Image (cartoon, rainbow, N blue to C red; front, side, top):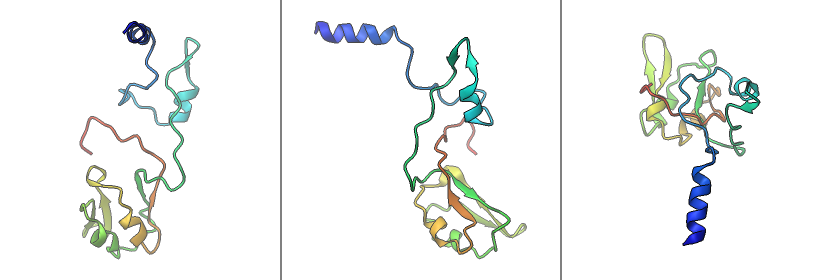
Amino acid sequence: MLAMLRTLFSQMLRKPFTNLFPVKYAPKSVNAFLRDVDNGRKKMNPPVAVPPGFRGKIRYHREKCIGCRLCTRVCPANAVVFQERDKKIRYHFFRCTFCGECVKACPVKALEFTDEFLSAAYGKD
């Protein structure tokens, strides 16, 4: 019991190891933000390295897209929607389950997974 109380009080007096999230004023580049020093201390802890084949946010290369709509047909969550007016797709991140079916189905590799995993935000989009 005494050891548990000692651990509890010692942790209460330390700064948290994790970053507050989401960052209120998110920087454009996390790497540049990590290098910025505030009174001799880093403002953020470095992000965790992701393993190979990680399914992060999906990047859409609009210039590669041929409008075949294969990605819209295989998406189980309807996160990929074809826009008739622009003849391109719209990717709804908040619907995505990161299954990877759209990335596999794309014949011209217009969709790809990134290593970006910071997805919390205040807005729905």
